[in-house]
Image 1 (tube, rainbow, N blue to C red):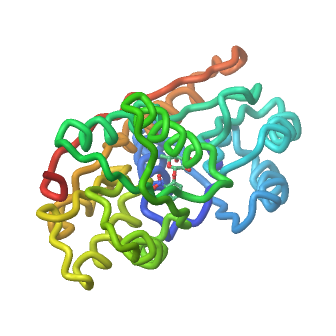
Image 2: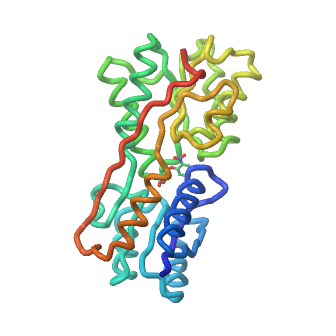
Amino acid sequence: RTLGLITTDLALHAPSQIASAVKSRAGECGASVLISMVEHPERCQAALQELLAQRVEGLLVNVPLDDPLAEQIRQLAAPVPVLFFDVSPEAKVHRLAFDAEQGAKLGAEHLLSLGHRRIALLSGPESSVSSRARLAGWQARLAQDNLVPCAMAHGDWSAASGYEKGHQLLAGSALPDAILVANDQMALGVMRACAEKGIAVPGQMSVVGFDDTADSAWFSPPLTTIRQAFRVAGERSVEWLLSGSTDELWQTQLPVTLVERHSSA
Ligand code: NPF
């Protein structure tokens, strides 16, 4: 049995951990996974045709897609079922996603409970539904306490962008107390920027990431973050695709949890 995975850049930690989890679970189920990595969402159709030509019996798509493109891909693939990871809940497609709002709320509440009020946001790219949902969740939770972010920037998920945007967020005369970051790789870059400016983490600046990738416990200091259980996402998605009962619309939200380490105080 063969499944297909169309994924965004595998040099990034979250997509690579999802790909790894999908491969492992498929292997345990005696299925193989053909992986196609696309640089742009518009390349998804071509990747889809390639995978269909190789007779995959189910497809996973971990690329940020707007609703029309996702629905188009579902139709092109039919009757082969397609499961999407980074589409809006409104799209009429099968979807497995982590609860981004809940994760954002947990991170913001953690900082608020520590007494921080000057909170900066480092969001991910606007093209990603997950990224927009994390940003909206942070803003909504801050607004509940009548707060607005003291500074804000968008990165591209990479540590390099975290470093560059981190320097931007730290450039003002009054420093933030804390920074909420949309993924752990960008948090790594932010902590590097803090170190270069002589800003102690967590003494002068708390940093909270999002993902809990395998390396995040080894950052210096070990990163406080929102855990997305990538293994579980891989298991659930593969099991559903191989279940043979994929006719009904399946939209599942996986819970996330706060992992308190040493980058926040
Ligand atoms: C991404 C996407 C690319 C690179 C990093 C991250 N991240 O750190 O979270 O975010 C999201 C994906 O957009 C989404 O599809 C889902 O896979 C989620 C776990 O990661």
